[in-house]
Amino acid sequence: MVLTKMCEISEAYYKTSVRNVVVFIPTNFNDFHIQATKEVGLIDGLHVMRIVKEPIAYAIAYWLDMKASSVSDQKNVLVFKLDGGSFLVSLFSIDQEYVIKFKATTEYTKLGGDEFTKRMVNHVVQEFKRMHKKDISRKGRVLRRLRTACERAKRTPSSTARAIIDIDSLYKGIDFYTIITHPTFEELNMDIFRKCMELVDKCLRYAEMEKSSVHEVILLGVSTMIPKKELCKIVSPYDVVVYHAAVRAAILSGCVSNQMFDELLMLDVTPLSLALEINEGLMRVLIPRNTHIPTKMEFGLSTQVDNQTSVIIIVYEGERRRTRDNNFLGKLKLSGITPAPRNVPKINVCFDIDANGILNVSTEEKTSGQKNMITISNAKERLSEEEI
Image 1 (cartoon, helix red, strand yellow):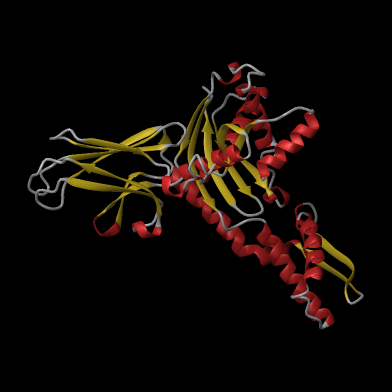
Image 2: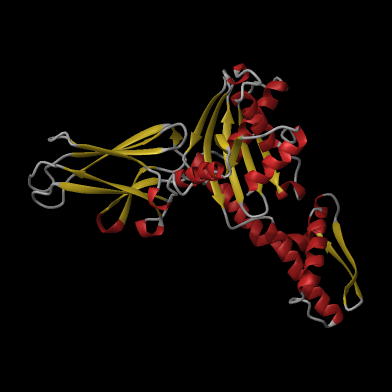
């Protein structure tokens, strides 16, 4: 529905039919989510020309501004994106040869700017109860007006020492007026700020980089409304994704030359660790999270019982120790193994991720030469061509 609506808006503006789209997705989308996005486009009658993860848009927009500003020094850039429902921290570097290398990416999908508003609303509800002895915590219409006022006030503390909430006839003819100071706002949300900094520290730890080595910080989402210091203003926090999508679409459709991107080399990373299941449901990680792609990793294993002629390889993604706490991706069976005592057959398992982030898993038994391979797609949960 979202893609259809956006196409309708574009068609109304440009007075022409729109059927080709470039879609940006969150960084934690795996192959299943990417395939599902493509299928949504097909269902809506659209051709998804390219699917790009959001951090790439930030990196390329920053690179384009570097070129426009004739900046040639190597830069380490941290992206701090806190929007309504999720929080992303990404760290990338750009060197003198215009090589963009993603160092690490971390994301928390249950933390967002809406939580700031919720805290302010709860605070004001308690203030109203204290001042007027009336409970409005279950008054839906009142809370909607209050939320709108808090949403506006939330952006104020960045530029002034206090935010004013003034609502006429909020409840039963009672006018409400209160002031939220900057210290009060920080106190209400201190645990959120700590979680944000924990994720920043984790991203720096994954990238093996000190805070002092970060040259620029780009704020995106609602976090741009409440800064504590002067940060990077080169990239527009509102237009960065749309800007890159427009450039990418223009290149793919042949409207502009791809020459400007010829000198650009980008190295993306895997958002989650990729592993296979070993004894007792444990994870054996082959490709750790934040590994640069494309990449290939191999692992050797053998049979567990005498004369075993087949093995099943089960693939997961995630950071937990046990497979049951991670995401199942797929499995494949290797048959025709030469009968032999346990631990004698030599079986090679290979995880191969291409530049698009698609994982291919292959197995080979050295003695018999038997091979098998799958492309991870969670086919069981996907729609068939007939259903699409």
